[in-house]
Length: 197
Image 1 (cartoon, helix red, strand yellow):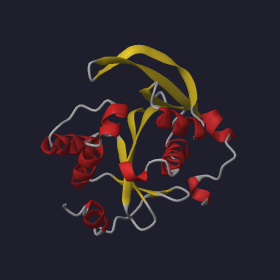
Image 2 (image 1 turned 120 degrees about the vertical axis):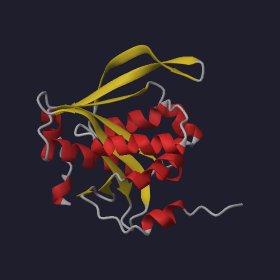
Image 3 (image 1 turned 135 degrees about the vertical axis):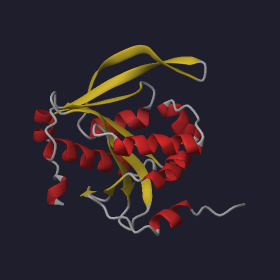
Image 4 (image 1 turned 90 degrees about the horizontal axis):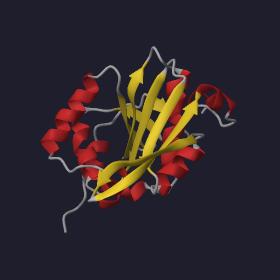
């Protein structure tokens, strides 16, 4: 059996975080992170819950390069205090004039269910509302993705509705849940903000 060196090689980069949560940090997405995303997206649970279409690594690398050049997209690798990468978080489809963006998250299979997703999402929302002029953040996920729905609601996101039969995955139609967090709702949260940690 081959030894998993994914964490080793990425940790050796000695990443410099640009934003912090309670127990995680966010570092800007880099082109070389395509390999990490490829591994995480290959996990059957992630592929099912997120509805990911399998793509070759070269295609994903091109996509990450596009993300980095896109002014309406801010992608981050989620790091533990020792710089181990454990996930991915992003603000996408940013519309500064309207003050809106969508949040995306994906955690490494071995790091799910440990509270890191909520921590990373809290940090991401603090960035969106504390440093950017956002008024509304949106998240969309399968209605049966219980882990994502729990994480979003812990971070203060409010269910808005369901887009019925909006996603085709593995030959089956899925409903998509739409959740949002407004600036006033974020301001009312009693948790510590990223800059207070």
